[in-house]
Image (cartoon, rainbow, N blue to C red; front, side, top):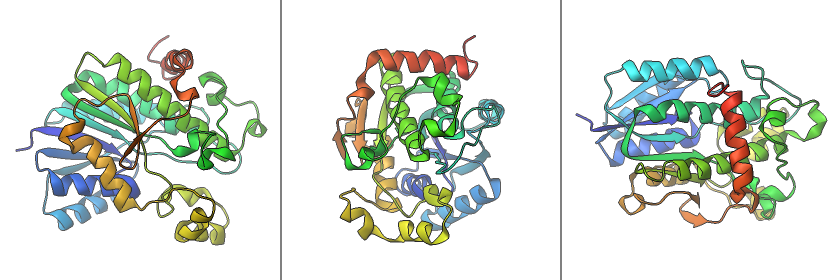
Length: 304
């Protein structure tokens, strides 16, 4: 019987799928709970992982990070399940909208809502069920840093959580800037959470998989030819000096943050694939971290 559970959001494809498959292959002590928006896709991914690894310690549950109701329902179902104790959480799921404004079911801008507010709420609700030692991984992106090539042309603009959740106009920033800003928020959230959990033997680390063109993240690109080109052409990224990877490489490296024994006490760090790095200067701003945390508590209704 498994000794512990890890929850992986967005586990039915891309990085999350490869991460789940790697854990299933490497460590039979983990029960993997795949949190997916689509149960059919989740069950197909579950079967594929079982067929590939022979590990049947996998289950699937519906989770839509763009819906606070769905997040609460997911946490309640987990609490009532007979799964092993929770020792791991990988906040992998994310999305980007290239053009226009779209909104979550709670009427917040969807990129910020799905990429930051959803994981923020999910993680805080699950903390009551976490047992130590525990590990939390939050997927960010090199686009959060304007000093890197990835972030140079779509610089994040931190306007504060309230304004990011409720933009007045789509002209305030581009779709890619909304994405890069949400990834900056992932960093600030990770560092603040690591600080708050420092005495509880639960580590929190942020992870940049590098540019992974083969994932579903580019599905929001409307032009079919451009979308296909971006997904299949690694040369284009190399020309601009962007570090690229594959779902298999970055997914297994993400699993390493959960599995590797020598990282058991590493917390408040940022990794790009397997390399520990410094994130942007702004991400370490404790005043902004505190502001984001307090406003996120209010936006997710964890605090009136």
